[in-house]
Image 1 (cartoon, rainbow, N blue to C red):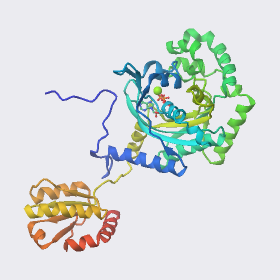
Image 2: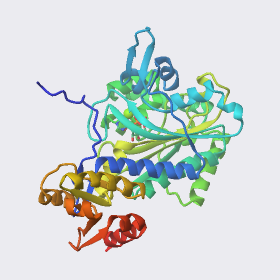
Image 3: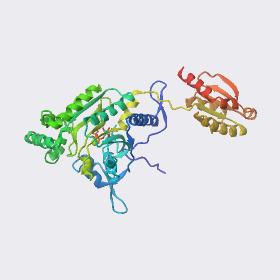
Image 4: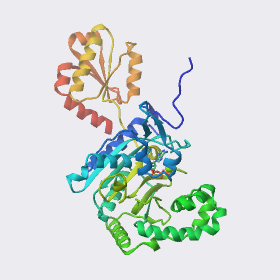
Length: 438
Ligand code: ATP
Ligand code: MG
């Protein structure tokens, strides 16, 4: 029978080990787990709490929360009717669901600032390519209930901390302010006035946006359009005094934290509820899909989704792009067992299962060979496992209650009563650490 393949734009993250550079073995899943663990730890230290929302939501949530004029809602959503005739959509991003939950469960009633983070799969019907999939994953944060520019800076600092802790290089942090609603209305007019004489030369999408969502023309990927927008008026010249003060404070606090940025007045978010700070972190090592993190302030969204007026700021990091970058770094990630346990013979095999279990209870990672094959073959697998130690059990050892300890790096082998080994597991762990680091 023909095997069934995964769908285009979806990927398996495998525990398979592969060689990436000299003697360094990495399995895909370990890169992912390391990214997740790093994010979790850094966010916890800043008192962010995890929130888990459903993978699918009412389609109307995204229409209202992201906006029907966007590519995401207009072209990329996985939408369907369920058997009860409800309009459902696989979430294309995380913010709308988090804000829905915030409003639905009145999290604002707890007062103060809510600092939330999430991770999970997102779904967009896009053209699959390196760093762009139909099911992809994000880690994101949302700070709800603070209009303070320090909240903008705090979330930015967390994103840069996570990327830095992972050892990423060649990143550029682009920053802009899109002002408030009034600033943007004035700017939109200036932009339309500037672009209208060039309308015929714009790409089709941009021409279409000239009346619907002109700010989005600024992030067109079309070269001809980019040449035209290069000389467009800058939104930074249209900020009112309040917006300017907010932005100046963000800049000075970023400076104080030593976070380098580049101003990019073409970095915009086209919808009314996006306000003030907008930012992106790009890598020069990713090719066309360069943006690793995107975020900004969205002071109008909570109200748009039926909650009380609540200022908010957040970002999302794309994990596929992050793991691609980490794989280029070839950092060693050790996920090998401490011990590989081989056995042969009826008594030895039964004994091995029990010994493995007892060693695990002592906190050691034990891979038990279940093949029943000749010792020679089992030893080969022990070598490949990356374990520090191979424990060897034949029927003689099982009867005597001993075990052979074979150090895989040196080949040195000693015999030891199993009871001693279990009593002194800490010392074995110590010796293994020394063997690994030498
Ligand atoms: P892009 O311009 O690359 O399409 P975007 O503006 O649509 O990105 P956001 O909605 O801001 O992206 O999502 C935040 C991050 O999620 C992006 O910077 C990227 O790292 C990641 N991301 C978005 N779409 C995809 C996708 N289809 N596949 C993989 N990662 C994605
Ligand atoms: Mg996109």
